[in-house]
Length: 359
Image (cartoon, rainbow, N blue to C red; front, side, top):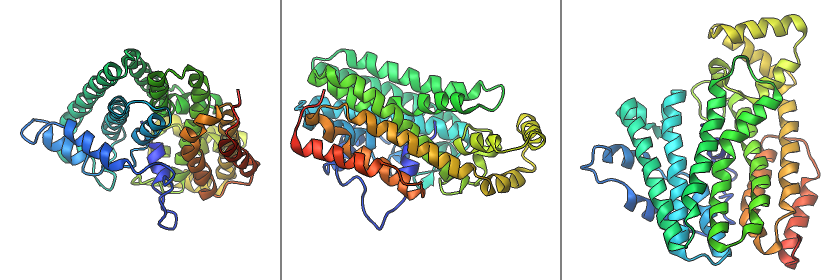
């Protein structure tokens, strides 16, 4: 599962932390997560501590703790839930690097490239087990036993989305692409705040959370696809998605711009699995209108996310506001065309300040 969120977020903007809207709670999360790792003497200890040498942005954990503070959830329960989701996310990264053959993760060698595929596979499995243990502790501390089932459902949804990618008989059209991309990206966006909502007894937030983060997950996946094509997502080659035949919004759009003869030639090349001529197709892709078309689709999905955010009660809009603002930054950073997003963002902030409860 590509870490599309972190790929998009890690792009520097004048040295400013775009997550400054979230409380400075990274240290407490990092310390708690490190306490859960196996000791150096454990067979997986060296690999675990290597992976967590860089903690990443901790978006999901920070979002859970921020939501917990907003909804007055006891800190022990919120911290365990935040760590549970973050550990599950990290397990997906370790396994994803094996699947994609990525040798770098967070600026250092990935686990499989440093310790071997077997150790990386075992570490990912171990982190999954740990995530469910932490979810159980969160449920016990917050009298919300459904958290284990909740985490299980979101993990199942994420892996199902990933499996759709493996089952492609032909390269997907746009509808199939959205099914795959949101399926593997959205669940672990939804989980942090949904778990906190259950701990707080705020069941009115469940449906809005699903709508917002499904669209947000799609935004980040399309953004990462664009970054891949222009060679700024950290992959070894700008054409890596093209070579791997990975679902990519820009490639999907590119196919629609080709005449019948060229489209047939491209389809034959995709179906062949060959890597020769990849540079030719990459050059054609970059010169086509596909990047602009993908950017327009990104903005449309951003508008969907912003429209769904208007359904949040005003006392909880702060839970999604940092992610919402980050979405707009990612889109503007990719030179997307202007939309009515500025006005919508202003309305959301006005609701937050006014404290008017919108149902």
